[in-house]
Amino acid sequence: MLGELFIVFLKIGCVSFGGGYAVIPIIQYEALSRGWMTQGEFQQAVSLAGMAPGSIATNAATLIGYQSAGITGAVIATAGMVLPSLVLVIVLSAFILRLQNNKWLSASFYGLKPMITGLMVYAAIHFGYPNDGSILSWSFAGMLLIVACSLYLLLRYKLHPFIIIAGAGAAGIILF
Image (cartoon, rainbow, N blue to C red):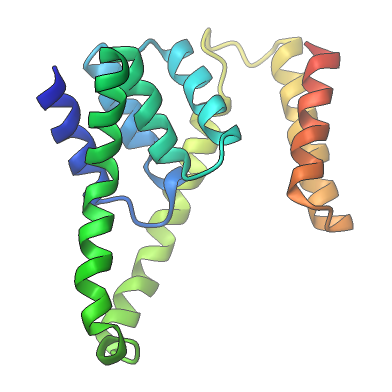
C-alpha cells in the first residue's frame, strides 16, 4: 500500500505542470479507481485541500495518503508528490541563466498552456457536478449562484480572493 501510494503520487508529481488544479482530474482518477476514497470523500478532501495553505495537489495527496494509510501514508504520498519538483528545481537552478532565453523551452511552455487550461476547466466542471447526476436541484442551483456571484465580484470589483472565499463560504452556510 505505501509503495503504491508513493509511486502513484511520484508519477503525478512528474506531470504536474500548471499548478495543482491541473492535476486534480488525475488525482481523482487514481484515488477512485484504486478504492482509496469514494467520490464524496474525494470532493471533501479537495475542498479541504483548497482551503489549506499550499498547493492543492500536494494537500490532496496528503489527505488521500492519510485516508489510505494514516500518518505514514500522508508522509509517503506527500513525498512522492513533491520529490519530482524538488529534483527539477535543484537541477534547473544550475542551468537557469542559460535556459531563460531559450526559444525551444519558451515555446514548449507556451504549448502547455491550452492543455493546462483544459484540465483546469474539466476539474472545475467535474468537481461541481453533483454526485447523484441531478443538475435540476436547489443545491446545484445554489452552487451555480455562488459561482456566478463570485466570478462577477472578482471580475467587476477586483475584490481580494480571500474576501470572495469567505463570502462564498458564508453563502454556502446560509444556502445549505
